[in-house]
Length: 117
Image (spheres, rainbow, N blue to C red):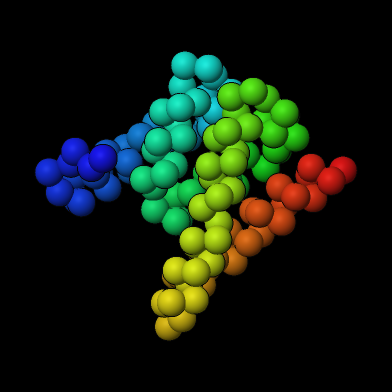
C-alpha cells in the first residue's frame, strides 16, 4: 500500500532511511526488530540504492545468509537484481542504468561466490 502523498515524498523518505542505515546495514538486517522494516525499505528503494546496499553486505554474506532474520533481508535485496537488469535493458541508452546493472550483477555474483566458499 502506498500511503505517500507523492512519489517525491516517498523517494525522500527512502533516501533518508538508506542514509541512516549506512554503516549498520548488516547489524540492522540481523536485528529481529529491524529486519522486517529493512525489507520494506528495500522493496521501495531505487535500483541504485538496492545495489549500494548489497555492496555494503559483501563482507557479511555468509553470516547474513545463515541468520534467521538477515537471510530474509538478503533474499529481498537479491530478488531485486533481475529487475535492475531488466530496467537497464529497457533503458539501453542510459549509462547510469548500465552502471547500476553491472553493479547489480557483480553484487549478485559476489554473494554467490561467497556462499560457495
